[in-house]
Image (cartoon, rainbow over all chains, first blue to last red; front, side, top):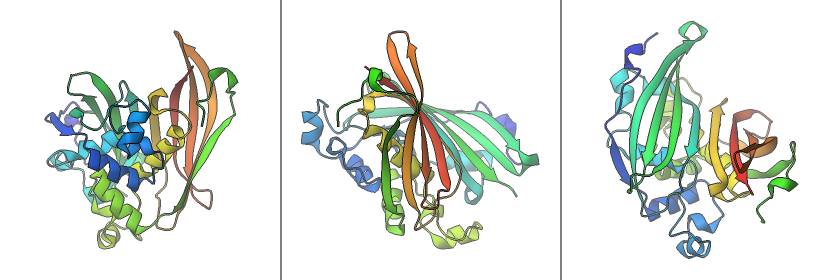
Length: 148
Length: 139
């Protein structure tokens, strides 16, 4: 066991990030998106949206906007080369669009190991609200660390 | 495509699959920039080899994004209540990912009609890279 369980409950400093139109367009390109509501403002508005719709997994990416997204890895001792993304879940509360501002609050909720420590897992919950403090979504990420 | 109706959906129905072209370093580089996930494991072969891998591997979240596209090409995004994925195998350069979803449950929660969709992303050999599920609300 290399990750100390004392880090369960550790919260990260809240931070905010803009949902930028250009970034959403680039993201749409990166995932091969073909539905124009995700990259064409006119199409988004024609579909009744106030701007480009933020796609389902983008919040995970926006969270990487924090000044040093892997700082907490170092803080609790996760070695980046041995870290893999084990799982990811989202619960959605309200849609978000280009021009919105997301605020992220994170907490480590579990640390455990499997196969006698050959694999370690760190679970982090992230709560996201918009500029009017309405919950947009929350997500849970599980990081797996290969020790063997 | 018309939004499917709860009454016309049945357990074991499949949603339209999403087929992606072979994974390239170029695709990973664009996703690296677009996602903000600059972990070198996905774009720097030297780093990947030092980490004990044969080569760079795709971001798990890129595979989940494909799985998400298989949902949003089937229903409007606001219908998706939750979406989760477990990553099971690494996606390598050249892998052709297909995301397939199937209805596994129909249920009613209060006044809301929902279906649970199981989604799997697999490659050209059938190796499953990620499995997930989504709860989708339908009228």
